[in-house]
Length: 277
Image (cartoon, rainbow, N blue to C red):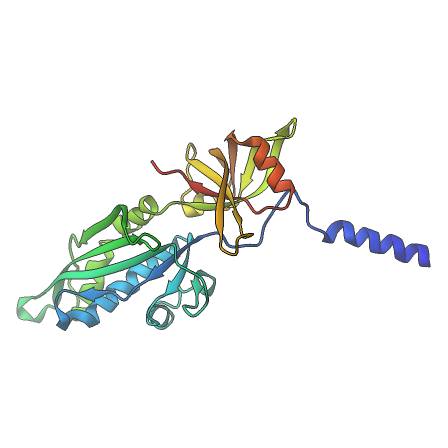
């Protein structure tokens, strides 16, 4: 009986203890702080909130970001107005000691309503500007400012519904803007192929769902916390060779194969971030 118990304990340990050659579970998505949207015309502040709701929907639907609500209103709006798009895992409470890597701000610069004759309803036109700021430096990132204007609006019974119709025409370019402006950040979860102590092919935990493309180059690094503050230690570069699914991609190690192999096997959590063009 005692021998059987020892065997069972050893068997369970084999499956419970994580493999040091892989890593999963931690969220390495970009952290984006959202500031309150404003309007150039103070009378349109309420409408600026409507714009921020739609922008946050697009941000969350990409599933690439953790969002920090910087003024306490964005999360409340997302819950009350966009239940179907709200995902709690995409949000971080502002009072937690987590710094946003980027800050997103928006300004409603122009909005016009056209009341049609004979009481047919309303049309709307809208223009707003989005800025993406590197939180640490305070500088606007490359291509970090963009203005979006509606192309047309369907005839609606109320000004508010006409505004939503006009906003809908800006969603596709807004989504493309987020995809191209923010770097992609992934977790290196496993070494798929190695030779003589060097990683040659690795598996990443991001795929088509977050816009990963074949040929994209990433820098690989881990975070050194030994100094009391996080210090990125860059150890290599990789290139996406195949998008395997919505959630995973395969990459070739183009530089630093020895260090990637060493640090991953030492239990370091290796993060991969798109290289600046």
